[in-house]
Length: 204
Image (cartoon, rainbow, N blue to C red; front, side):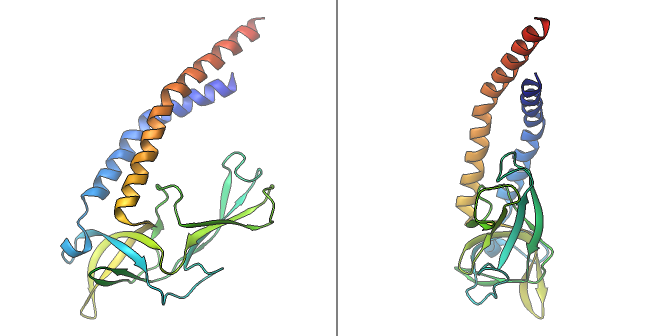
């Protein structure tokens, strides 16, 4: 019964949360590219991380470390234990774009959220395993934020950085949402069936 109730709660949450997510993605799609944006506007930059960017940990220039509290992704209970962020430059076809802040968020709507993902320690897929994921120099990224001017140059005050390029990002996010929508009817049916069986067993 608990499993069925959990499935029904998940379906209900997705029905509530799904339209909000779709609205957020639509807003991102509507953002002008860097080349089309003006100073003070919100924009999206798509390119690759400059090769000269210093690495912070294990060859990564941006990273997130998570630790499993119940086996490696056994129940998705991953706790963030470390973040690595820095100011960086994104190389685009129209030239470099400099990000002047390091307090941006990581956009995790695309799966995987970053090009690199590996077990750090211990080496086995066990409880307390540490997963590290992130970006190396040359990896494709997208960055959203406000276009600004610093020392006469156009710069980006970033709010979010994610796994690029732009086209691949939106394709991956759309596919993920489509898979979830297709799965919801089956999850609803499984939840109802589990509840029905649980009630029958409880009644003897």
